[in-house]
Amino acid sequence: MGGIGSDKWWRWRGKKDTVEECLVVGMKDLRKRLCAGAAGTLSWTRTRSGITSSVGYFRINEDPPTVHLHYRRANKVDVIIPVRLEATPTQFNGRRWWFICPLWVRGVACNRRAGKLYLPPGAKYFGCRKCHNLTYRSCQ
Ligand SMILES: [Zn+2]
Image (cartoon, rainbow, N blue to C red; front, side, top):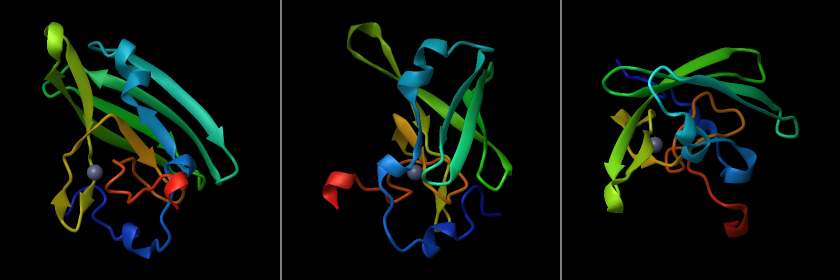
């Protein structure tokens, strides 16, 4: 069994995508709404890159805490992907929340902590910048 992203989509993509081309879910967008049972919608459209998406999410009141991202790709296929959340302690007794990247690359679960998850044009699943091999436009 491979897991999410174990299909080979990342190999067909020769050119590097930039983060600017991606849909992004940032922890800062969710942070204020992270409480047990919370649900809500993040939505945007980006027609230039052919992606029309809305992202809905909710946090299950379970261990481990999980956000389910639900979105629709340009080909009208709905995708639901569960993403684990993890909190790390900060100074002054705070907590910082992270997404745990859900992708598998070459048979290995990524599991990196990420403050943002990206959905490049043509990709099916949100994942961290490393998994999607993203660069910033200014670097190209
Ligand atoms: Zn990753």
